[in-house]
Amino acid sequence: MPDTEPKSDTIAAISTPPGRGGIGIVRLSGSESASIATQLVRLRQPLEHAHARLADVLDEPGEGSDSLRVDEALVTFFAKPHSYTAEDLVEIAAHGSPVVLELLLRRAIVLGARLAEPGEFTQRAFLSGRIDLTQAEAVRDLIDAQTLTQARQAASQMGGALSRRVAPAKQMLVELIALLEAGIDFAEDDVDVTPQAEIARRIDELTAPLTGLEASFTRGRIVHDGLTLAIVGRPNAGKSSLFNRLVERDRAIVTATPGTTRDLVTERISLGGIPLELVDTAGLREAREEAEQLGIARSREALADAALVLIVLDATQPLNEEERRLLAAVEGRPALVAINKSDLANCSDEKNYFDDQLKDPASSVRDAGLSVKGTGLSPYIHAAPEVADRAHIPALATSALTGQGIADLRERILALATGGAGAESGLLTNLRQHQAVASALAALGDAGRANASSIPHEMILLDLYRALWALDSLTGQTTPDDILNLIFSTFCIGK
Image 1 (tube, one colour):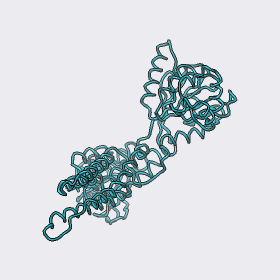
Image 2 (image 1 turned 120 degrees about the vertical axis):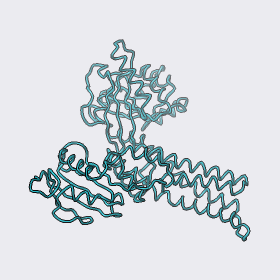
Image 3 (image 1 turned 90 degrees about the vertical axis):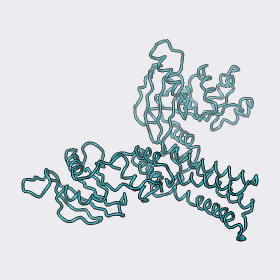
Image 4 (image 1 turned 120 degrees about the horizontal axis):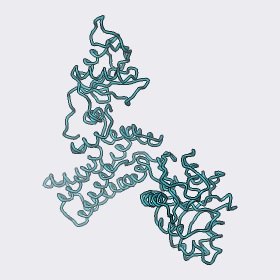
């Protein structure tokens, strides 16, 4: 555990969101929380651990007849260590009137409590050993969750999934350190020195699970933070119509006039539990009007910044020079092509569209040196092997008007976002966690190279202890106080 000791004073905060609601909760934690609570309200029965008690909230403290009841509340007391903070904790649930909640909070401060800092309740739970740092971070993630998948992942982390995944590797590391320490400390007592091959084997056994854990950061970060998808293409290709189909409402203005979209239109959706921010952009073309020029400039910025790109082509029109440049620009990036208006062009699949493009000897696809690959495109690729070595972009026919291909488009976007990775528990979800595991792997790599070079065990131990410190920092056992303060400052007050 960190050197920081749990604070002994009593803290108080309103733990429900600002504003009016059906219920509002004032929470107290600390040695004086029960004593203060009995003075805050008029209890109808004495406090008892894990039992809710009815109480009256009075406009003035005390039992005098002049005190008028302004609300009725439920008071629940949790005796240490059987509480969220492992301290005596009281929750007063009144009606969600800001006036009543503010009255209770101000009165608690007058009676000796201190206003809680952001995240201080969870910080006390961590400092008392009730939860580790990965579980504390999961509390914040659960509060911030915007999709059910995010909530499930946070709940799994709160249950200790990440800690349990790290524990076996950490135990193996501790055993290896103990083995080398014994060989050094008791060398004169006929304790065998650990052979070089045995050390290498144990380091390899340690490295494999940690490497898998480090790789989990790719999906964990996507589930935690989400991704941005930019929808780009020529004017009037149907970008806004596809955008509306994906968000399932008329969010962007759609007209038959090219260039209707002049600015970025964004909407956040959940796709397979992945938070996805869709960005509808202005059509890319040479524009004369200043407003459209600014919109196109922002479109190019969105294209550059987006993690995923959806290029919308018009099935009724041949590829133009701007689209050729666009296809070349996304080479090597996560991208999809939607061949829209397929219902108008009698284009049942993406193969027919690109085969038609090849009929022209000056084909824009072939001139671009690109192949756009999707279901049924293998004949095209085999017929033109010179382009198969360049950028391969999955494509599918869609119709924003009829809905054709929209379900497949969603599945393709989700697969592109996750890399095809399935759900798993115990993921790394933030950069701090990833850096801790990466540091442990780097230290193990140094230890392995030192062992292969027959460097004395004392020096190998330095690398192994560095790996152990990194794993301890993951769960918070050796995390510096300033890092802890930074983490908990991002919490809301009252949690």
